[in-house]
Image (cartoon, rainbow, N blue to C red):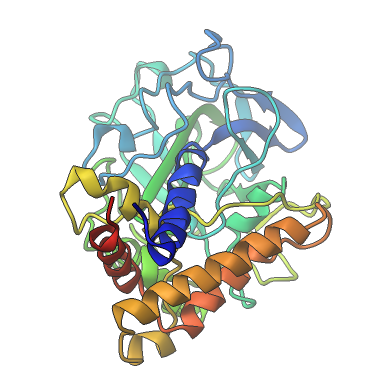
Length: 386
């Protein structure tokens, strides 16, 4: 039978396993695009509809391998055959949601938003593939001065936007709009849409990349996913993956660069890429994003390893602190989970939702890292007797 101590800890781990499915299913797709006031709805997943410039995807799940063919435009992405005409210099705004039904918000808050464009083949965007389309980066948005990410705006029902270069050469293009979620292992959410660009000029960017192929797991902006993303002290500490954005009248220089003028300030927006100024509804409660831990291949311990989904990455101070013992780590996990539960019970559904932030801080103050917590979870598994 369980001892009292073991059963209490087991209950915490069981609770972690219980919330895991909801965390895993919390993904999304582009559901709507607005171009200078003209709206385009995207096809819902499994709806059968393809009547949109927004490409249909088979799932709202992320691409997790930078070499996966689905990194091109999303999982099982297919064109709707439409390429509406929009002018060079237009502002394009994106709304994200779960994708299976109308409504709902994007669930994640940490990581950059990156926009690419690529010239479609002469046969049109309907026949575009990863083999015949090369992309140039147009905009990138990341961390703001208050250390929140622009991605957070999506979770509050707002849109994010970028501006097509006014001097871009006319023709048919794919816009590849991507959210990179980095609260745990890197999760790529690419979304493509087809457009005929009118007006413009003679800017035909070089410095082109393909998807897959543009990213590597060792890229600084990708390898930092998980604990490292929470150790960034400022926007300048983050290096976006991929090439630098192009500028009107020319091409970009270096292949990678620290965050720069494309990233809007916390209270203002950039002229080239910015979140919508529409009012944000109250943020809905969120469980702490899943953090996968592959340090153990023993399938029988999967329910215990689920505790790592509740362990937030450490701060720089926590990294410098000696790792707590197994018993100390276990006690800290129990205490922080108790505070987490109490915070959610008291939350009224209005105002700022701070439970996740407080949970992260609790674990950081305890000197816990994901590795410490995972070890504690496995230790409890060994200590439980039946």
